Image 1 (tube, helix red, strand yellow):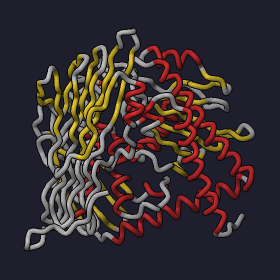
Image 2: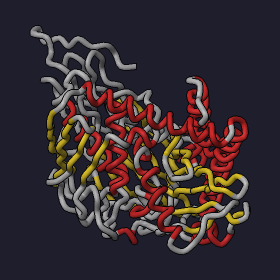
Image 3: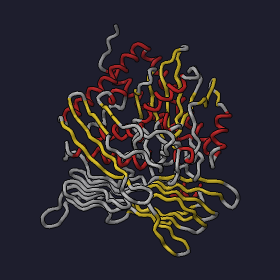
Image 4: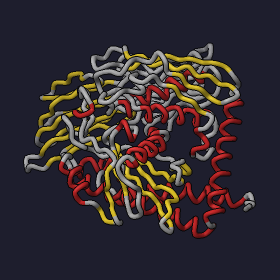
Length: 536
């Protein structure tokens, strides 16, 4: 039996982690759309031959749980009618298989060596438009999944290392921006080729037996580190209830979780959460898992390698047919963004009862999604998508950060230069929303203001946001952050827009997004002065 020295597994672990990061670099550098090239809205991972996650880049938290969950479900679907073979890549975006929403297209590469399956490279990227009733494929009033866009079950994208052009043509024909879809798919293919190459190089260097043994040690080490950190939190049961705002603005959609910590690990029970709704706020089970794993990593030790071992001490029960585990064909586009953010808040607030001096105040609690699209006078279709940063909640011992992509997003903003080059849009305002962070011993970060003007043609706008009625709570006696708001300016008249809305824009119209601030942390001193440090 092979005995490994303590260094080899560490070297292999580091190589696999960087390989997944290098996959992301390949996707970014090859992508056509600003959403992937500039905002980095993609994630990459490597899996062993059993479909166990062995390395995942630190990309998008909402993909943390959904990519492994979705890969296993995709493989089960493929096995019903096909056989995995060398030279293939498979594509899927069905949320009830892949785990997020239709915009997130997953590309899977089975890796073979000497005709034997040895692993998988996979990546997921947010495509700006995949059809549906509104540009951006995330319409605020979509009644079902089919209104949100093209649903793609697992099908071949690459066969014998050649692109299956009918598959690409099918997807492109159902998008308002077909050229970008073709280019972004090729970027995802490039990412998987990169991961496969690094995977094979590692096995060629160390041999299959050494590699396999190292993987077992790496997974076991992550499991042990996670169990140790969970044990430090102590045993107990902690609950939290929060609310999402429905399309009419009422904070009526209930989310509740009970967390039980015991010697076996962490148990999450979402019984009592609202039933699935007839609007796109439902979150597939993979998205819910992502929130659980994100919160645990943030609360325990984010340096624990993200792999299958981290999942072993974690048990999640979500009633089927609920908001966080809906039945097909419930619409889900906003669940991936808005509901996932509230789930992260929910879990962190529950854990605040177990470790109050480790958990920050609530951040802005929304990704403040903006989808715009239309046709220029020259007949060119376009589609724009962006999430906007908000105020980070203040932390124990430190202020929150202003205007940052918090929790489940981890993307960047779209540079003004890219917006004005690729779209008929002009950025007229982009700044922090002063004094929107909650006060306290440590103050919450401020939200931001982003204003866009349509310069030509007409467009349709979809907005998906939250925290327009209920402020992000502060922690330990501090004040909440301010709510967000939307405004439309037409002909010099400024009017308010709901948090979740779809509207038509004319040339010269202005759209203004103000995101919520983060909650403060800790009561202020008796003299009323808040002990804080400036946000960067």
